[in-house]
Image (cartoon, rainbow, N blue to C red; front, side, top):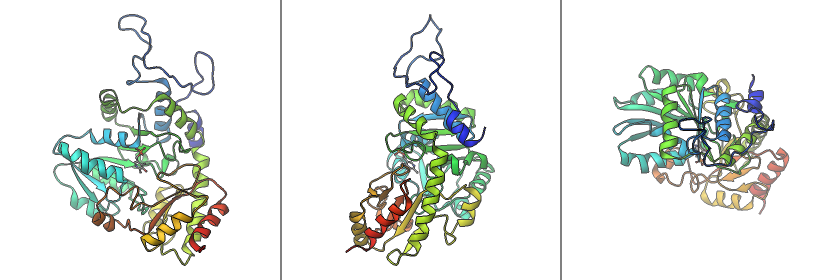
Length: 379
Ligand SMILES: *Cc1c(COP(=O)(O)O)cnc(C)c1O
């Protein structure tokens, strides 16, 4: 099956009891057992649930992976992946990952003996130089949030495999419609379902996909042991979302390209970060690795005052955290998603006070541009 077909059908069969075409929401915490040691494969809701199973199979299929494990949020999924490690292990992480990934590494897991180094993973040499004997995992995000840096998935997978280091890619920004890290040799893919996969800003969730049976087994054990699982209703909402992923991502990419080009011609905009622009430092790699360039753009307005003024004036675009919904969202990384990163580190990775990030929605692109234009120039 091809992508759009899998998005609609993978993991989902008509309900055996009624023939319902859509997977029911199995709102139950427990399942009746026929006799001692005999059940229908379901015992308790923390371990498994048929609606969650359907979503796990659906997204695993979209990533071309064998195993999917759903969690209560993207951060719960990332936390579970880091828990595959042991005290003393070292992790190399893309230097401008999602702020929450930085936070759980530096402020939570380092207290349990893991070590994290944040490195510019667009430069393989730098990654190589930061690898130690104790390095057990390389965690990358591509495109990165918010400066849209692209890491070479295949090259990173090769570099790590030669050293028996596990690779993880956070594929939240691209989604499996635009790129499938497992096909490049990456071992583990993580997602915040909250964003494009659900696509309607009405639930939170996370997913881990892998082809490695041992990793999958450990993650299933962690679902049961730590309990950070996704509830059935949220799983159902996300299943509804993935059905339209292909058409949504086409339109997000098309509109974002249009807006990115428009932004580059605005005199109040100093710099536009979008991998689809020929001037983007990894444009060629993005073209090779991604189906289109996605729906996320960042741009530089030069100062906190300019950003503040602009954000106060947008009307159609909602000033809010998050991304990947049908509606256009605008945010200010330095004070929102990246607030937990110390100012010096923020500066180093290009998250300036004048940087604004836009998640281009599915409204008419000319209405979005009208709103941006009005916010930039009205006095
Ligand atoms: C939002 C996000 C996360 C965290 O996901 P939650 O569902 O909010 O916990 C992780 N990585 C990226 C790239 C994200 O955008």
